[in-house]
Image (tube, rainbow, N blue to C red; front, side, top):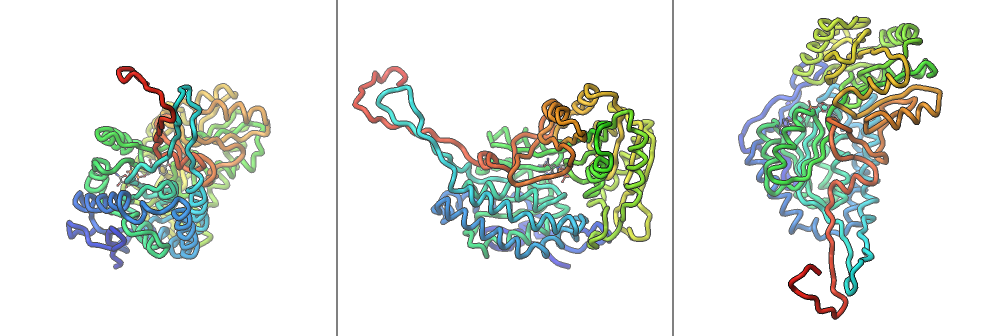
Length: 492
Ligand code: NAD
């Protein structure tokens, strides 16, 4: 079995604990690799190295243009190794090769874009109100950033953070999910080849309490960039407050996908399916609440169920598979648990509703694509994130009620609006409390467009030009240009 060590100061090293744990292939249900079980000692070592690289090493001497060039080279290497990295993600995570190839071919854009941005971060000369002074600002990197990532789309979600952080001049310690660390460890090998100095990027694998917590507590870490559940995000935010760290949180969702009677039905049915069954529903932006206008409810549901029934399940490594396994056993149990909750709450089961026993699913952790109708927005199945292939259909009368239901959750990450009325699309986009609104499409993401949550879905934004500011702090520099002798006993 392949063994994945920690990655500290450009070297693969054993964990201080001397312990390893298995990483499973969700399709076969069998272990395929071993991951190093890091602890606080490893975190301290990695943070020390990252801090040295930030404050003394060659990295701190590079110009912003030179950092940008390194990021470009890294993007080229990811493009070269896209197939290999995609296959590792599929093996470790169970995501479809069809989706992972697309993701890996796209990820280089993050390094090109933020590499290009690295030397375009400019301060300003401030037109002061005081005579005899010249004042200007500089945007400086925060320092060592701890990045904590989840098990779904590990490399994409890491790139959302890593590209702007490195462009800004920070150094990094990554703690990937204990369920899917392999792709991150394969990926960081490319840093040395691209020419990054050792210590700029480090990886400590292991569990949340043993690696995540010491990383959040470490006094030399200046920022935590986290993607994961709201439960963990809250704990991290509270702990980070003790050392006044900057924190950005990309958390969960319960996103409404709203279809109006005037929508193009075929498109909206496709959008509803891709919103919840793509990636087996294991995406933070899953359109897990389908809001249907009363007048089209029956016709829509008929078409939706017919399409969802055709989903091909099975080996995620096959290009024609459409729904893969659930990534982890605890997540598998959680999804089945929520299906039971929905049944007990009185939602009407239209499709699926349990483990997939199809022969092509073998011993993998598969759940049948599941659709519940007659869901009330107050039910737990409508309020809590399932993170699996489980759709809740909720009926509404008019625009006003659609907005009220859409916003009546504590999350606010994604949302979809399906309508042919341009004015309504704009009105809905203005009124929905979510970081992203898709109109007549769903689940589109780009390095160019800001991404993040309202309400309990998080704070801070990734992607787009402003994302780099999450890794910078502003300094104000005052210079006395005049011979003004001020009274030293009052504010100047
Ligand atoms: P999780 O919160 O269980 O774990 C995320 C990471 O945090 C893992 O690396 C884990 O080891 C670590 N961790 C756990 N406890 C910790 C602690 N006490 N201190 C520090 N680190 C700790 O989430 P998950 O199950 O891996 O991922 C699924 C969740 O992620 C879902 O809620 C999903 O919505 C969310 N998610 C959000 C986005 C987004 O961009 N908004 C994207 C993908 C996933």
